[in-house]
Amino acid sequence: MTGAPRELRRIEEFEDVFRLFDEIWRPEPAGAPITVELMRALSHAGNYVAGVYEDGRLAGASVGFLAAPAGRVLHSHVTGALAGRGIGFALKLHQRAWALDRGLERITWTYDPLVRRNAHFNLAKLGARPEEYLPSFYGAMEDAINAGDESDRVLAVWRLTERRVLAAVRREPYEPPVPRDAATGLADVDGRPVPGRTDAETVLVAVPGDIESLRSTDPGVAKAWRHAVREVLGGLMREGARVTGFHRKSCYIVQRTA
Image 1 (cartoon, one colour):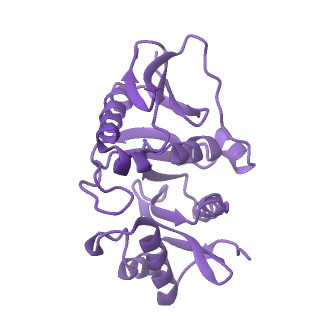
Image 2: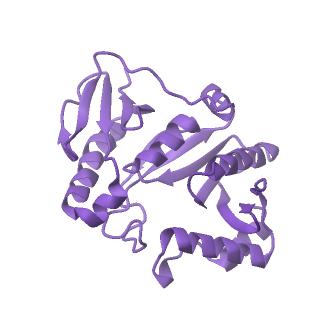
């Protein structure tokens, strides 16, 4: 039986989080996403450490800390959950309620823009907006999921009372329409990235079907996708274009500003 998300406060619970994250990322000993001691300190200082237990075993957890500007933002540093149980969504709803109870306006986090399921979850299911492209944000990462790739991230911003977020909380995914004259800035052709046009008002930027598998099965193609998305999506965002959604679980919708 899956319990409701709740704050974690005891050392034994933080040890459960550490073990869960170790199972998910399988990092090198010095590369754990977060330590038991730091979770203890963050929780004691009033930050966010929460988890979900399933039949007595931790099945998902999230750790965040208050960020600038003071009194307005929670930065969600790391979240991990067993797949296919809806635990990630439940944790986000708990995190949102926690933030609103403290008068916060938004929650931010970073994610790998190449991971389709995360992009769909963040943009469609939650209604968050990517607002900054961050090349090689964490430097070299040697865990089982990220090893061999560069750690590009985008900063997702979840504005907690925005209309699209309120709809997402009601389980109404945010899926904006794509105009007929949208250009394909980056296409997936037989599993490889193929650049296109980026001069239209609306540009579609594809990401690979499974970048995590590509890292081990075809590192060269994985690297090509990394650099192509960095150039096209990152380039558009640097120029001031806004990511407005994620289309058909496969590509970013990018809108140039007038």
